[in-house]
Picture (cartoon, rainbow, N blue to C red):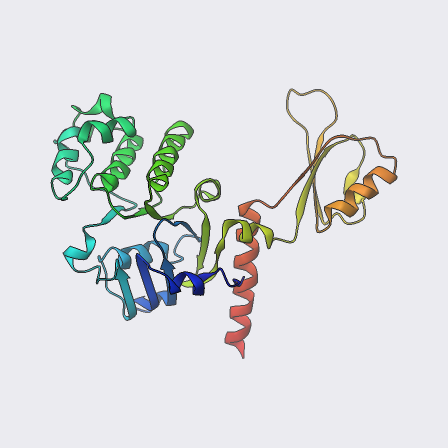
Length: 320
């Protein structure tokens, strides 16, 4: 998937907080990142998608200064992220966070907050993340979800300009995930910049304004969320009918779903490149139906199509 004038090139022309320029990173014989470029400007909320081992966490480790690239350059706020001064405006939640098990939640927030020139008061931060009642609990007694909420809270304690979130809601239940989404949206609404990775496609679709797809160490796609969704050829037509709708002209895939405990006709999900033509065919055929809905692609469908198509092109180039 390529971009138009409003894409990556235009973003690089303006100020950037994160700049990755033709970066390669290897671990022995494995190339984790292969000539990757990425630019993130102030106020962006960018979601990175990719299968396990695609290179997402490696990229964040370079941006946060934990590793150095084998080739190319990485800049954070214009400086080298390996310099401590460049990391002052950075907040980070890695996939795994080690918390001192005998320290209390409030003590951990106080300890981390004192490393920053400007910080969010402990009580305010704990309240924002639903941790106020746990302030006096030792971190070793917290559940996995509570530890994850605390880890994300710590990434925001220093009022960072940019936050890197690596799988921020892994292991959380639906309620806790929604609460963290609200906190991330609040930070972004105040002008913060977010670069997050996630294997929850719903999460990226809910939060991100821009989607970057990484697969096998290569950026396969980089575009606004709306552009990514619009580039998927198929549309979904949802309709209830007891008739066999999978044989209608233009249907490339059909799923018949019987809702448990619901009386009435089953629900069909019909996938077609031309929803208008399919609806016309449905109406003129005289087939009884009701509950018609037409929906655009989901991010899951967009992701699968982007990775599949770009991977095929890469393999074709390699074979030449």
